[in-house]
Image (cartoon, rainbow, N blue to C red; front, side, top):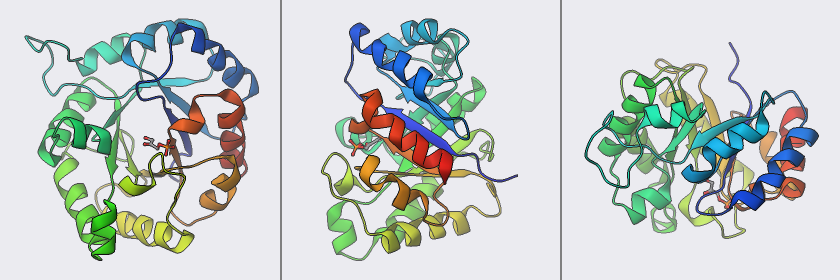
Length: 244
Ligand code: 13P
């Protein structure tokens, strides 16, 4: 089984009901040949699913709680995401690790909850600029993989997203050799446990650099922030992946 190609959009805390018109354009304009996923803010999940109808577009959450239900004000359970129509959930994004102090162990517990609810967990890893400058990138990512992936993970229920923190929303990206080095390390580290897992690159992916990034070995897709908000920006990325 080859890793599935996935173009995933992370809307973060952007978008409203009016923005769902972008979904119509994405459904109408998307190429086949890769999976396409949009992860909107949780309040838009259900209206987005209703808007897509039977359309061939996946939707996902941006986080879930590690518990199945209970007294956790403001949190969302994985089963609630699934009930709203989500197939995936992003976990351990660097913004959650930074804003909410999420640890690798937290991420692993959330991923277990996601798997229990039948969701595919997109587990994010990535180094800060200081860590890259210090030459510790591969060690940092190896430790994040080790701590964030639960033992229930399989190639079918898990996706790994490599997102260098310093490349997110900055317009800067690692050079191709740097992306290739990290993706090769991740593929190697997971070769026994998750041999066919999809590996996404994330951080300032846009139409202008997508084809080049998708040509790098072991890059099976992208996790896209800013350029996923508008169909006109996102569709060329989807096309580049489908053609890769
Ligand atoms: P940008 O594409 O806006 O850099 O964001 C990347 C990201 O964080 C996706 O999860």
